[in-house]
Amino acid sequence: MKSAFRNAYLFTVSLSRSLNPNTNPYLNLSSFSHKLPLLSTTTYLSPPLLISRHRKVPGRSFSTTLSMSGGADSPSPSLDKQFEEFRSKLEESGSLREKIRAVVLEIESTTRLMHSGLLLVHQSRPVPEVLEKAKAQIGVLQGFYNRLAEITRECPGQYYRYHGDWKSETQTVVSLLTFMHWLETGNLLMHSEAEEKLGLNSLEFGLDIEDYLIGVCFMSNEMPRYVVNQVTSGDYDCPRKVLKFLTDLHAAFRMLNLRNDFLRKKFDGMKYDLRRVEEVYYDVKIRGLTGTGDSKDANQGVVEGEDYDVKIVG
Image: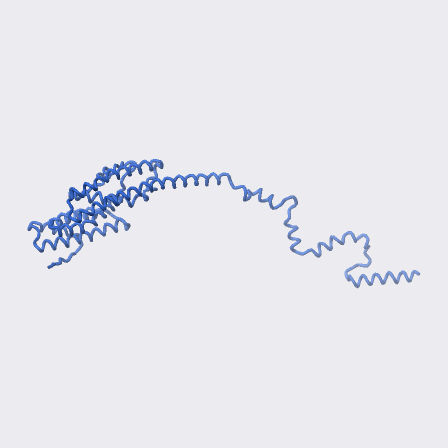
């Protein structure tokens, strides 16, 4: 009986050893069985599961971490305040530019009327008649520039921020005013006189010097055409007058240290206006259509550093 029981026990031990070679047959399985789940779990856990258990913090969730760091749904109050100020300033600036643009469109329309009236001077119309129609628009322009000055007072100290909105139109206005002044007096309209005609105050809302100079350069572009038309109509002394005026004006511009910008390009264009007027004057002179006492003016008309060829026509 005992031998049979012993044989059965040995058979059971050998069978368990064949199934698990690392099993110690002499260990107390009843005392070791409560440790097996822990060992088996630790031994056969996959690496990703172990890492996830290591990263997990008890009692803390992902939403809790975001709320502690600020979160996407709760921006900084100082950031909101700053961009709210930006929004308000941009809206004010946009509204201001709309007001300025409305006035600038009126200025542009008025300058077109003045220009169309002054073009009649090239058709040998009487100068007083041409100037009378153009002068009627000066008071209108003065009212528009006063409105611009009132608008810019809403943003003190920011004149040049909005200056580009009326810059081009102002240059055209200056060119018309200087051409009208020359037709009437034969002299250049000074900067202070141009401001006075437009009713501008140099301390608050004045005429920019660069706009004035560019406007004068635009005015010189009308001179060659005016000379040719006047000679065609029989005014042979006109080339001499225009030549002297442009020569003095070109010499005055040479005093300026101009940068390589738009003003410099317009000043360089004045040299070609002067050359065209000189060609007309020399043709008239050689044909004997002017007096004999104009040789001094002809010599003064040559621009320093420039050589011109005299063309004999006819």
